[in-house]
Length: 192
Image (cartoon, rainbow, N blue to C red; front, side, top):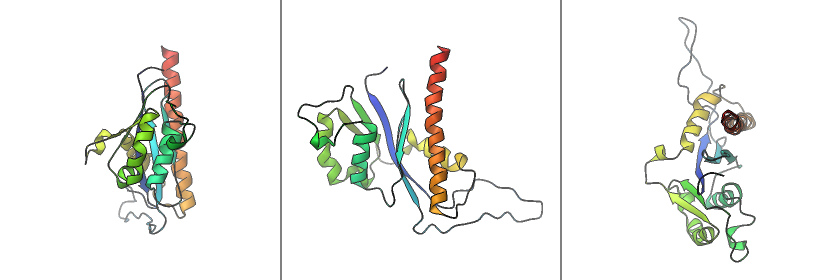
């Protein structure tokens, strides 16, 4: 694998039953209508990590029932991004990843909690570093573009009647992104 580390961009995004409508169309003289579903209790929260560089770009995500808290963030980092065989505090003495892993994330409360701060030494000992972006700089997190693309372009239906329908559409769009990352790398390898 090229490069000196595994680099992941981590963030969460919320998907409401009625998504932003950038534009629409209607017959001349008719008023354009978009169905609006009330979001109360039907927001889909997704935690994702994007590794856009290297020989094997990847996208991993989870869409839990409910909110995203620091316990979920830590579990996701060690399992999905870092690929550790056990939680950092339960790793064998002296265990270290074969390659360093850097996870870029913002300063959301679930990312900077006491639980996350307490896990930092164990993560560092295993070869995992959390790199916090400066406040108010979402443009520096590469996964933000993926969230925007998914919300505005990958979900052609703009209003979902059930949370199950919204979840299925978001997971299908993210699966398509992951597949595209994989195939784009294979196409580059074949062209070289």
